[in-house]
Length: 210
Image 1 (tube, rainbow, N blue to C red):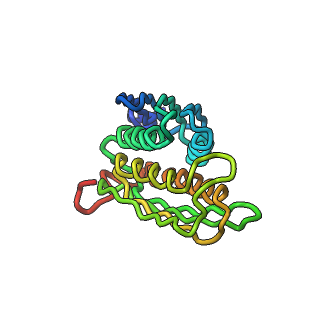
Image 2 (cartoon, helix red, strand yellow):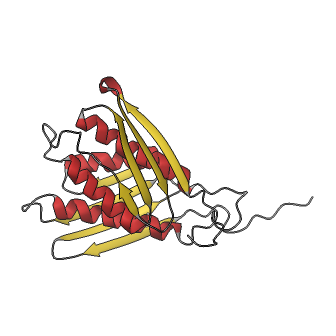
Image 3 (tube, rainbow, N blue to C red):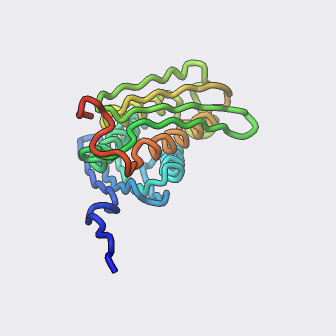
């Protein structure tokens, strides 16, 4: 009986390990794009830990992140640098981007507030962020993490992952639920974009470059 021989790399999980050390933060991250949504997040910012756990769960990524930063100053450096590291993890794990769908879109509603968020992205290698959260209240009641903190995380992530990222708040004014929707939708849209389509040979680009 003839058996079809599979390529050794056909089902190889895409993984990455990144460390970042500065005078302000020390961060170590590990990512598997082809995981099941498991996460272990310790940034010292509880609300960010929660958001990143949602991001991994809904994107079906296995993500580990440990950060030590100058939280005695404020959240800024730890928040931004964790976005940098996770962006670098995605860029490294995607390697040459061959076979990925490249584009992703997700809508996520949240509970009684009727918050609804749309995330649309392109793993284009030309990073940019379009997110204007001015209509949302700045501070959460009990966390100290702001919508503008989330914007800075998204900016750092998209820049270092090489992603063109659009985040639109379509409805709602409860900031906790809105940010939950954003991180869930980001995970789901990325899961779509990094999916390897067996019909696609090479890159999803007529230019031949991403």
